[in-house]
Image (cartoon, rainbow, N blue to C red; front, side, top):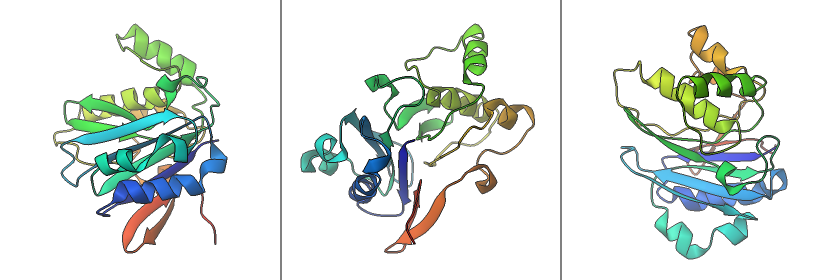
Length: 196
């Protein structure tokens, strides 16, 4: 179980993501991370570290995380162990632009997908299954004709990743996520859980 928080359209998105992650701290205490960008998506800024949200993010760190879009993650490892290389959100450069992802859950066929990707030449830097999703999105994006300029939260649980690719299903469709959407001061936010 991990905690995810995302917000878009907020001038101080990192600070709101910090508060969201603090509220979700019970979902993971191994590591915390935030990635931010502007609406243009040209540059992503990231900070991840081991420990509790308040220990990972001081005021000076949050001041460096400028942007109006942010995703954050608190980790409780269920796949890949507590190695800092598995901390999220994870970043990747694609030929269509940078991409960041935070993931909650386990891919039921992660081992087979990873083996297939490695046999095709993929290189991994982590031991978790989130990086597999990055590779799969990279394959989808390689067929895209437009630049990627988005940042999103994907709290997918036990989804067979190849189903997205092989069946032509659209993983960006809200039907494929179990996220909670709401608004904070007119800014769109998403979290892995919400209170009533």
